[in-house]
Length: 81
Image (cartoon, rainbow, N blue to C red; front, side, top):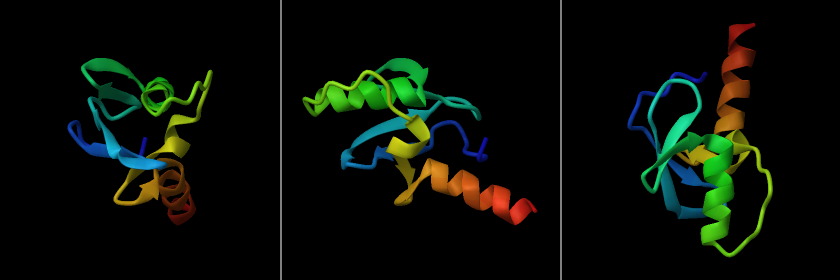
């Protein structure tokens, strides 16, 4: 949705040492060998941190170059108007 190439590294907002990599141009990522959605990857990442979360917004929890994916999407949409 925001034009990221497969293989782009994303970092968890609350712990930038936790990463996943994009596998397509939609919302699929590779998190520790599991191909899943951004949101599920965020839930899995929080479990690594010892936090039990049932559901999370992937675009809000993952960042690219220090910016939340949700923020990047909003900027793209604003610039398209």
